[in-house]
Length: 476
Length: 86
Image 1 (cartoon, rainbow over the protein chains, first blue to last red):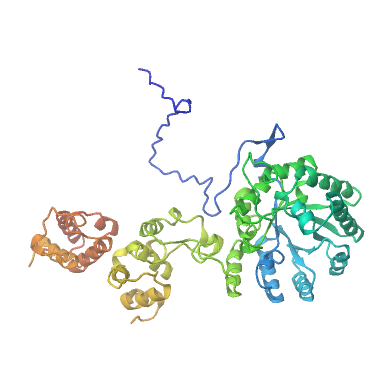
Image 2 (image 1 turned 90 degrees about the vertical axis):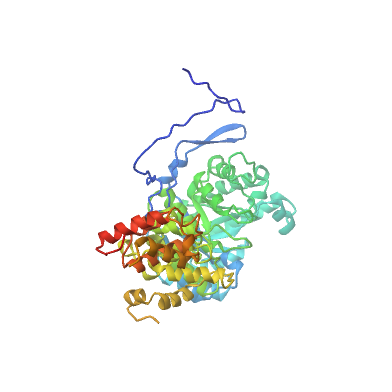
């Protein structure tokens, strides 16, 4: 008997899917290896329609292509908060170097050069002797400012070359685009003369006239770069100053990240390693836009620690780190434990990191629902994104509320005593503590979560035999 | 000496705060006697204390009715050498 084919409302034939019954689970470990972040596996070519033609991109090539992270914690990051002290910058830079590892995955970090304190911080960081991140400068587009770069002994500096008409006409008050472009080119010439590599920051790129100003400017910069040694040739930072960038195929210029990268990389010929994406988070797209830039051919994503930056912030450095590992499929010398050290340090010096902030918030891997706690208790991989103990020094936790149930309390207590496997205490044995928790809400009318300190005191009181056994002192 | 069934019903009455005479063997702890999640754990803990036994957490918590609890605990008592009145 032939099965009657069903058609969907779209007219397509409905595809039937057969159950693959198995007795052993398939945890898809080739994608979710647990000891690493979930891998980003890319296959096949991706096409984008640009100027009426299908253009191909090979995302899979990113595994073998050089992609890097750069940092602007001390420049854009510092624009969003009271200034760091010199000592703080030195310590953060030191940890950042450890995070990026000996291969220089965090390749560069940029510094202001205007005040004595700026220059002292730069000197102190360089005195640490780390190869990476390399220190670069950031100056305005004034020829005289190259003196600062030269005096600081830096090989590269960012310079503002804003490119939307908002900036050209309304902010910088140029009379025409040509006047603006000539002025920028004079500054680039001054950089070459000073022996400094200029990194042109195309401010407000995602609101600029790409064909009418940006591409002719890039053409000119490429011509100028041909006159100097390769190591001095102009780098381009694509600045999504207002966070207008869009990652998905089909979006139009000037907002399309794929098309912007394509135009600069494959039409103007700027090599990938000289292209850097700098985003802002005004529309919650900051991380994915950076990752998209990598995939479409941009070599570097510019970031700040914990995303701190002007207004809504920049691509979070630690987010880019985990994206990098997921794309490459290996740690590449990165020391992810430094993320936790950096987060702890930032909190100590007053930088607020929300509790639910990925990878670094106090509660990023804390579950509250009892049913999730039950899953964690049976197998932490059920509700933990990866081995957060190994990669971040942060075991998965449960927060105790009215929703935690006996499972949540059991998970908490086993984590508290650091018990694994067969050693773990059964929930039957902790029923007094579970009852106390429930009564806090049902009898006492409590509305807040129970702190670790409160629970610790109650463990001592209600479960003295365990306290004595695992803490080595008598309870009560 | 009270039987296993009588002792189980007495513990159940005390933990769930229901009159002992209303507890039937076919009653489900959760559905008929209203045991909530934590109370189920408390029941198992109290049964262990009453009989001086150790029960497997998963096995004990999967017992649904009073009558099944009588069977399960009688078996555990036998395994662990605890004398009880059947």
